[in-house]
Length: 330
Image (cartoon, rainbow, N blue to C red; front, side, top):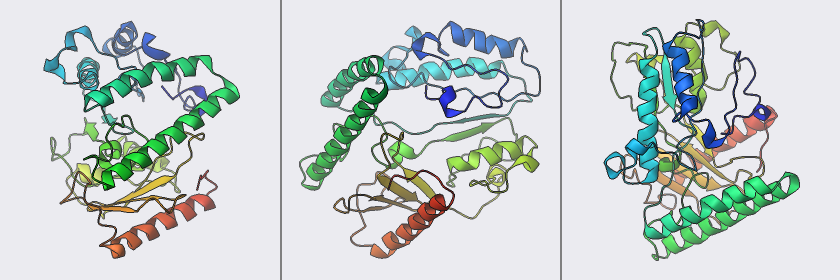
């Protein structure tokens, strides 16, 4: 997956492996050896391990024992079941003194029709062919072209949706990275091993992925190591049954520098706002999530007051990023 040394995610680790493709998977011998290291207590304590689960990404990997409708309607579902089973083996190999946090980086629009299934079957081999054969400047041009095609097709789909020709603005589109709808950006965070008073509870308050780092350090008793200028905040009080003042989450569609951000979102616990920052012709979107979790009824034309509030929040965020010298593609 995308955690190669070029991301600098190898810094600070004693052992670092950039797994290559399906050959080194949690579902095969590599996974057996990885789990055995913890089962046999070969890792000296105290330790921190990060495992990037790429097995449910394209090309999806499914264990033979889980490749049936009983474990999911789609190949994506069965890949989830396969990884779930293997994670069960890994967690069983850990002792009671281990804190486990499980989360994801995004959701996924899976194929819901015969047309979408056909597109996904065609897209996968084509993508992998060009990724293997192209290099350097050619690969960059290919990625930019893919981004342009995806953006153009999504604009066409939005127009068809507004005209009543299709019943879903995501029809014929699969994958992720093309919008900030909840189905694509809302992910779970599961914390196990902390043993708070409300163990087993489901916490519905919104937190952000930038809150995960300070929370891990706090739970590990390393609160003093949290940088003073960190963007996120500790959310341990939520795990312990307390409340925190709600904060908005900022979302963007950027996947890599060759596919610049153009669609941004602001999400509170009640509202979701989306805007195309480089094309004013694309309508703003505003949804009241308690009544419209599927984000179907766009309230931007009828609630311009809320849309303005969201736009102010987004503008403040973008200005802050510019002051810090972050790369922006706006």
